[in-house]
Image (cartoon, rainbow, N blue to C red; front, side, top):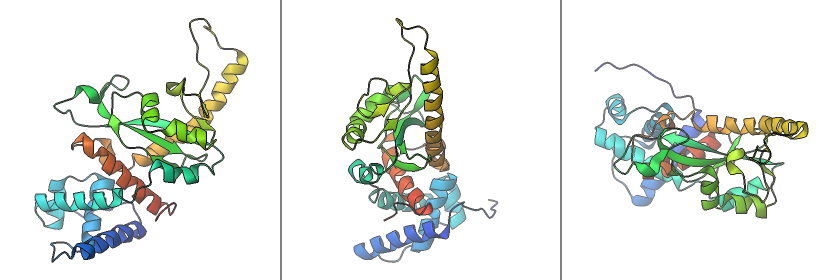
Length: 260
């Protein structure tokens, strides 16, 4: 098998953060000798999450078995996910924002046996729904647990309690037409209806301004998907939440914001 050197577009701060978590976990469990030291295991996990390298490629590159590579990645991902903030903790920061931007994204997955709940009629393929909250600059603040792709954005936001939390915190939040009827502190664009076929000039101007603000929220989703593992998840959909939360922790460490 041929091999070549590759890079991971992350700083050493992120590598050291993950390696320290792994080192602490091993010390707590009094783990014995392993094939890879904490630094190498952290590098293995980052290559999988950031570059999307498969377990077969990682096993060949790190000279370990495929099962060992899988086990090491699962362990590192779980350690990171446990450190992710829940919505209540994230709201302590969100309530200090000038305003927030809420949007949903679909993370593609492989087809599974029980595929109907994961098929999104909007996107015409299978995936999981993740709700994303961004700040006024379009920076990623928080991402929700994953739900099946057939779940509508408004339903997902209500299921996670996002709308109620934003309303209680009195945070003005901009969202697209998919959140029409959410009420509370959410602001959605005007929508044409059967009894109102045309929008007024003022309503069109409001919609244009609204779209410019919401466009910044797309940056947060794009930031989340720079982690190549999310291009298409080839694992059990139930693991999507763990992966998304692990990536959220790593992103905040890399950006040096909200990191524990």
